[in-house]
Length: 265
Image (cartoon, rainbow, N blue to C red; front, side):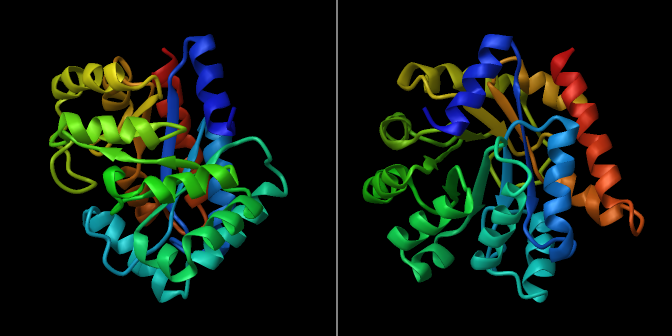
């Protein structure tokens, strides 16, 4: 059983929901990323999604686009992201880390080499936003053979056929995008989420994490009523943008603890 699967299994046994925060590697500055990852864990995160900055993040709204731009302007690459995970692993061998990004940097490195280097760095899962499951059977197999969970996105527009394709090759968890549009939008409809999740559950026993549009304790709690985990990204990036100098780590830990408390209530 993978580290991600173990975490979700333990949560289920404890009757708890997962908290999966997202930060962009290198934002607000590269030297802070590992400290922010540890702050997420102290606050109660179960899995960390670490965004690989990319110049054309088509699925992301302006908030996460800005975070990518800040990281890229400071020279952060996929290789730097792997080094950050390796450093995080020096003092945390338990919390799963998922690299989330786009195909181009992975293809430049080569999928097989990427899988091997990601595993060696301590990465547990990979979510490539612009890889549809029906076109990624070989990629998913390469990741799994290296011991890395291939995670795929499903959306309100996903057909029953795509749900089946994702169910066949995904492991770790399914990331269900709760909105039509880009990250950071705020028209979250929890009834929509509740109506579609049973369709995914009918196709696969893999845990379902729901993201896009979750911005506070109340929306996280509402989504957790039907999902196995909630993903929070844009709200965290905004928090880091707004944090006074020197207070980003503390602000992030406090915010994540609020979400964790709501999920456990």
